Image 1 (tube, one colour):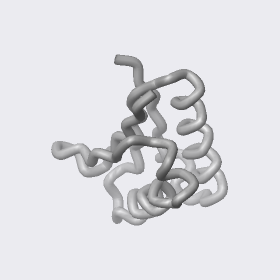
Image 2 (cartoon, one colour):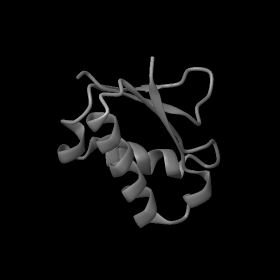
Image 3 (cartoon, helix red, strand yellow):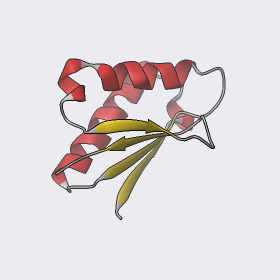
Image 4 (tube, helix red, strand yellow):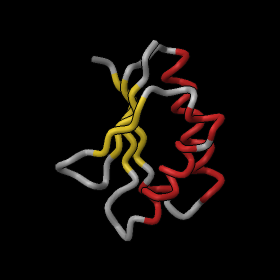
Length: 84
């Protein structure tokens, strides 16, 4: 199964870049009909993961994907699943 991966470690403190990266990877998944996007906010304090989840819960974003799964073995990782 094809998947896209977005590692946010390098831009963890750049709010605008995080939003842009998230928007771009979601649009790319839709355009290329990719079923799975792996987002790695990292473990840290959990603030970045909360920010990513808030972004994904926005009404304009939420209607673009099917569901979000949290990795049960690694809490620093999220999976966004798409139905095309």
